Length: 472
Image (cartoon, rainbow, N blue to C red; front, side, top):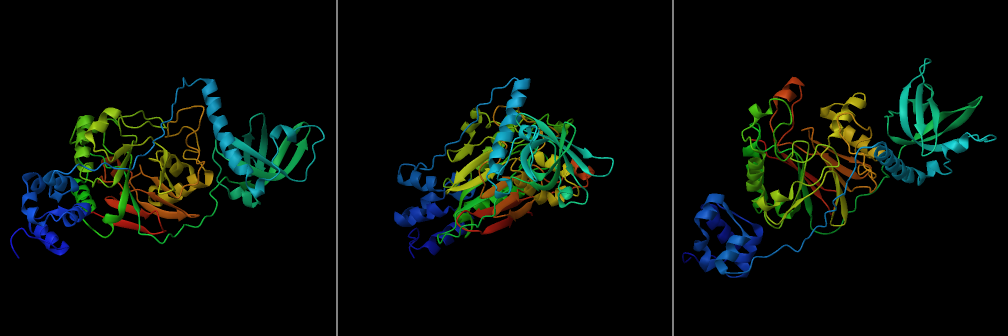
């Protein structure tokens, strides 16, 4: 074969492989479609050799073709939150939570015939069984070993008793969550008490994952990269980026990539953090991150969400990363607020960095970071990303509670705790995405070993889920 006249797919790949180069799949198709075989030697430029990657842009530059622009534009809704943290702001926040979850509960057959608490207290009210929806404001135990709750709705409050010999006694109920109560009502003077027979959760309805007879379309998920930290696993991350760039059977089907928070390590997040940093300047950390992310093939849309280590406010909901950072990244990179419901291929992908998982581990008996998937499922059961106000999760008391899970997700993605948990809860596939940071000193003190350097792929056209492990 004459030097430079490469005509077949295998010949072209063999040529570039001999130079240690990876060819982007669309670049290969462009070479074949435009008879670029005779020009193939001219593609071995210093830039290509340094990056180890041949892209569509390299081909178009050589052939003087216009660069393609993505026709995928994403409307990112940005919440406008203006509060002064007054008593009225807090009232509006809890009112929003109550009304949203009450609407979900009232649609349940188990809660048909729901009445307001004030109605139960009216003279002459009689019913063998009552149904109410309330927010839990107090939770404790009676001297006889029964559970005691105080719940309230928009106008009034009432005491609820969960008898220790009833099934409802075993329910783990958190303060500030909104629940349905089915039970009998008793009177003692002017005082009314509900004795609960059943606790009704807003919960996720069972659903069947659609199986479309089409080629797979993958959304890939990772979290907690912590670029700038001395414990950032740069070799693993580089290996993962190289795999995305290759014409692998699975990587070629990835259309979306989610980075769900703590993309850099930041500075001043905890006392003495500077001694753990390889890069002290946060802007330089984002610059280094962009060097990795900008190698992702341009036909993959990349979504970047902030976490508690990023340079936005700590309180949730968190806004997008500062717009000035956008200039560091390619046009296929989009910034998201935290949390966010992203619609991809007509599927709802709910993304949340996951600070409230720390609270759930403490609030749910028997829970730990190694079983974090159960904590994720508890969020779905309660239809809220931070059921208990306060704790380790700072929340902004706005007039709209953005943490209520109003739309049932098809895929639910979290991160933050540096674990990796994959599961399916009533047809909702979820993942607590893997970190790209080795065990920190704090984790060592807590006797927790992270499960790093794993990329999770969800097929949006079927129930297929794939885990790719890039640990050295």
